[in-house]
Length: 145
Image: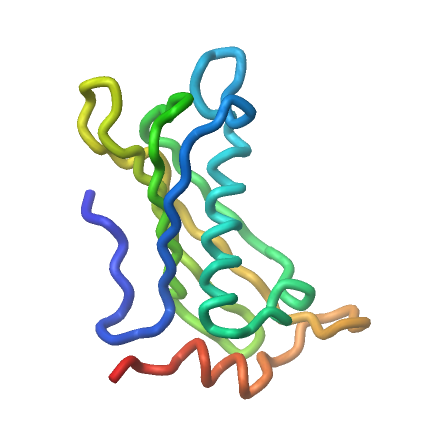
């Protein structure tokens, strides 16, 4: 499987490298299922910090999430996570992600997990979704020079 790729020129991707820590593992000796989601959320946070949109998080709850595990990750292994904005709708945004386990213990780099998630724009104090603010839309859809 090829790594996820953003649309050409789109400023809508982030990559984050981490190491699997002891707290990320479970009794079976590999990553706990929640570790992958934490890596994805950390990469998502990096994306919105890079876009200078810190107000995204209090207004963007997840409304759907899909995660497919493909390979194990082990304590001490380096991990590379990529998050890509695939689509921005009126009040929702769709992302894809991949988590790769880097070469470790003689084993080659491998796709450990992939999936997608959808967030919706819910303004502070609101009870229902509303359109993304123009500033969000402009920064998310901006093209690199």
